[in-house]
Length: 204
Image (cartoon, rainbow, N blue to C red; front, side, top):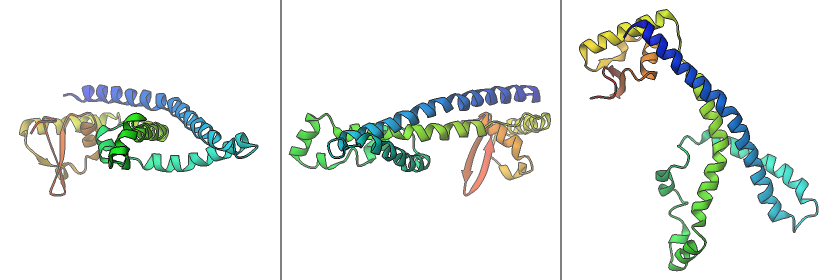
């Protein structure tokens, strides 16, 4: 693969990441708006019978709820709406499954714990969307001719050997290796604490 082809692929990658990152920003703002109104309405339903000015109080309560949502949402590194994660969580193996009467309640009310899981994932979508947008914008690759030239040379050498090679052999070429890895042109694997690379990508 020529340096020119690598630069072309890098530019396509950068354009796609830019579109993804910029496009997710308004989506995230919309999801934050949804989360805010979810909290405000949920608390209003509970409080409007108890206090006179419940609508004003829920404004401040909803804003306060944004703080832990942001903190936990940014910390939440798992994929959203992951069925495997749901099966391992307390939402799945909950007290409603521990007795016959609990299972009846669970069936009658349409699995309320499962609904709670979906609601939590919906709320987490707001901060996680920002995380994905930031990662997309930060994942843009260098387009310099020098980096592309070194990347093309490394790829030629790996194509010739077609065996696992310690990445330390190219430790002075960190940017070209990152380009090849992000473009999925090589395969990377940690072996005994050391990074190894090879061509072709994705094949043993």
